[in-house]
Structures are given as structure tokens and as C-alpha cells.
Image 1: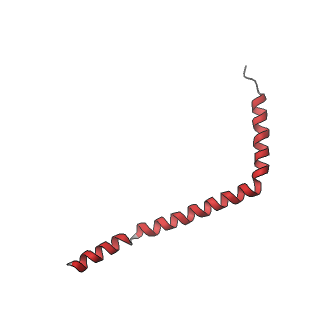
Image 2: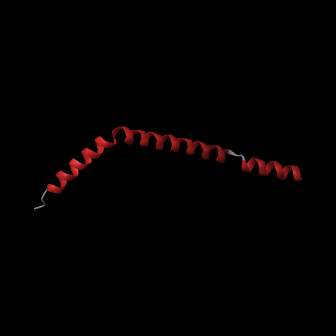
Length: 63
């Protein structure tokens, strides 16, 4: 009886949910690294473009 309970607890704790959580964590980490690398590489260019665009939008007048 105790062995059955122990086996059931072990399979519940080490089931698929734990593995999928680790996999999702790895994917999120890789995406975060890719975003960081992209912003590091193109950050000043993008900031300049956004600044130019916001300046042009700020100069527009609504009739």
C-alpha cells in the first residue's frame, strides 16, 4: 500500500508538467536573449527613427 502511494506521488511530481515548464522557460529565455541582442545591435538606429517619426507626428495639426 505504501509503495503504491509512493509511486503515485513520484509520478505526480515528476510528470510532464515539470518538463514542459522547463522547456517553456528555455524558450522564453532564448526569445529574451534574441530581443536583447536585436536592441543592442539596432537600438540607436531604431531610437533615431522613432524620434524622427514622433517629431513629425508632433508637427501635424488637426483641423
